[in-house]
Amino acid sequence: MLLKNNMENPFKKIAIIGLGLIGGSIGLAVKRFSNEIHLQGFAKSDLTVKAALSRGLVSEAYLDLSQINSDIDLVILATPLSSFASIVKEISPNLKDGCVITDTGSAKSKVIIEIEDILPESVHFVPGHPIAGTEMSGPEAGFADLFDNRWCVLTPSKRTNLDKLNDVKAFWENLGAMVEIMDPEYHDKVLAITSHIPHLIAYNIVGTANDLANVNKKEVVKYSAGGFRDFTRIAASDPIMWRDIFINNSDAVLEMLDYFSNDLDKLKSAIKDNDYEYLENFFKKTRNVRKNIIEAGQDTQKVDFGRGD
Image (cartoon, rainbow, N blue to C red):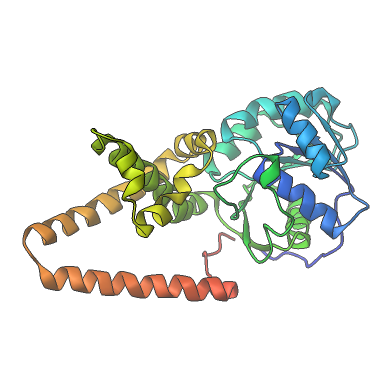
């Protein structure tokens, strides 16, 4: 699928629904790119609305989705995945013909089916996923350069309008991101192994360590080595967001977990059998993979997700 190179701003009025780390960072990145874009923001709590306005994440912010402007060009869903369908149902009657809805969710296949089933024909959906973030959350966590030189994956379906896909591609490039077009199911498998399972393991190992600290739970913190702290940093991520990711990407996560479990069983057997050779070769191989990951991070153009066009 060939996309035109259009670095002009395709959207003049944008609504960001969800003003946490991702939504807030989008607002700041948009303002960094252009002061001419009008930004509406929506959040569930009054504290978030006030914080978003105080930080200048958006031009105006509301609790009530009925306040969405009828001439909005682009709606960005930056809320937990489980909220997408209800939001789209509520706002769709107020959107103009040709309006585009995109999202920032980390699971795509089920979300696309769910949204396209309820979306009016006059409104376009371009599924997206900026692969950027930190373990922090809330409107105070956002920053303008979050997406600089980071990948944003767009996962069009058969119904996705090519011109609108081009526009959303240009939008993310304007925010500093590199855009990759990918098949939704392939995206879900890639993210399952590169992001979702690592988070699941981090959450699980923290829970296991806590369960083992029967006498004094402070011992988990007191004797935590640097590796434990570094590895479990991502376990501080938003629990609601991750609950929704695992539910919405369950097929791919379970498939990748089977692969992971099989490899873990091999390691258990090698340890039990004192298999020096297997362990050393395995650690050498994975160390080389880690080096390649670091090198790819230093030169992100080397990263190849595999195209879905």
